[in-house]
Length: 239
Image 1 (tube, rainbow, N blue to C red):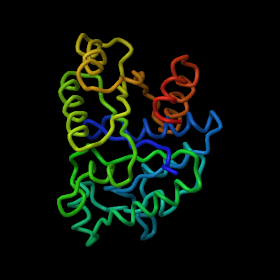
Image 2: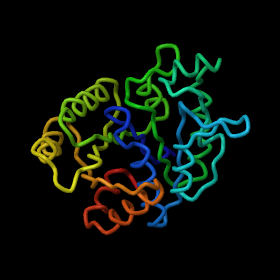
Image 3: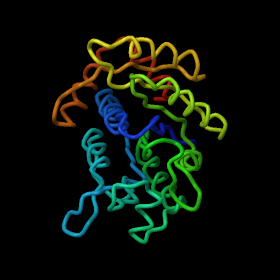
């Protein structure tokens, strides 16, 4: 049976993919779903007594209420660079088969699996292979996380167009970090994105400023759980 889940990508680095992935994990957990999480490749990992730890994967695990292990984070790289460069420095070859095997194990023990990519779809991983190729290998639809400000329409439409050209299904877009008092560009971006990118806008999430990431995730998940349209969004994501 085909695994249920979503592959979260971004229009750029720093758009809030990890917060979005963790928030969805916490939301599903709140709704009684046995959710698994995965960060296949992480650059810039923390060195903990000689073991490299993905802090992104740690946050995902805390949100989902599951244990961090090597299936959740198969490749942890030391340098905060594009994964292909970080892997070269570490003397590591990123093997898609190893990632897919880890994903299959997660999918066999969870009802739904949230996979977070690294940067955007065109980020290189290994031997000319990109994040987009990894998403296709895993076989999940995409959820694109975009920022609300000037330039986001171009970035989001390009991301969705590239995905569709590569045979990837885009389940929807989340516009993340909308200010309480948005400017004209921020106000108009979600409508333009929904009109142009060929995929629905599944949420416009408010900007949160909590210094603690898990507190931010908890606040966003609670907010989403109280929105009447959230049930529709989860259905669109195949939950």
